[in-house]
Image (cartoon, rainbow, N blue to C red):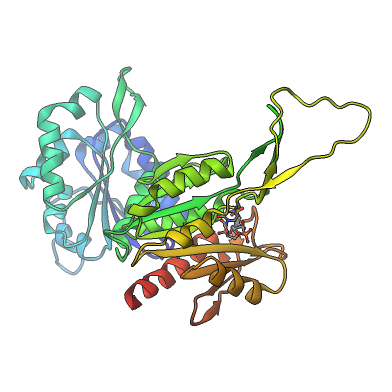
Length: 400
Ligand code: PMT
């Protein structure tokens, strides 16, 4: 569920200067152990040689609409029957127009018409061409026909102009493919996820914080989006890019996070609090930089608002509230105590003492505790952990 490994991707490449980027995308797919077959239009061949793609994916590139395969089945039918997904990148204005009207005058267009698999289209063209009403009408028609479109990026174009029309980033295309291939069991659900640390200011340059990188919370947000949820991610300061398709609300302190979360909580079906919120903040934030002086420095700390406990008090009927707990010992007892005290539906307890678990690593080992049971998960990537958390949330949702 967490990657493209073993997925059979039929990759259509059309005649845009961005065709050279498709070589990098094929390489990424092969690295991820996806099985790639390629169709190039004659326009694409003007920009890059089929030999490049044969070398990268290990399969001959399909060019000819009238070629038969050894079984005697026409290539345009067989190619899409043997794939899980058809990706078109870059997709030119001409290809979009053909697909919008059902024209079938080359191998790629006929393969799309014959396809019974999801089709993901990544347009790339000059800004004026992309924003032209004809292209926008074609785009709308393609959506009506059930194709999946990834919005082009904005920036410098090969033609020297600047604007919308750049081929999207590989990560966005990958995410779109994964979303299409993933069961949409969170479709129609509004979820809010918190991630990362908070910073509590001591003076204009110093703060108290913790080692949370945001990786766990961002993985939870990405997994929810992939499964069809409408996602709001409230994030403390981290150095990660937000998952595509997610609304990001950036905050700094625990109070900022409380304001952002509590003002949105009412509209949410599920709230997951994976942020590591500072329990304490300095009683006073000095307006000028604190000077070193000759002696030590004593800090007076006061308690921060417990956001999760406030959410538990206000929980609306049917809403699911999921907490995290970072524990070094007595995991089950501590998890169960927080589950009850904060009125949660589930708590995800991290073992933070293991070298590969908890703060600022790629993997995690967690125990999922609900009022009726607990389940210890093995050491997994944070992405896989996030999907297992959502599996449990979906099961809870069905039981309500
Ligand atoms: O970000 P990474 O580097 O990937 O690391 C992931 C993680 C270890 C930070 C994460 O998985 C995690 O365990 N987050 C919760 C850490 C924590 O603050 O645990 P806690 O036991 O102190 O808090 C329990 C719960 O109350 C948490 O859901 C927390 O968000 C919430 N809380 C805590 C204090 C507070 N003032 N307000 C809160 O809402």
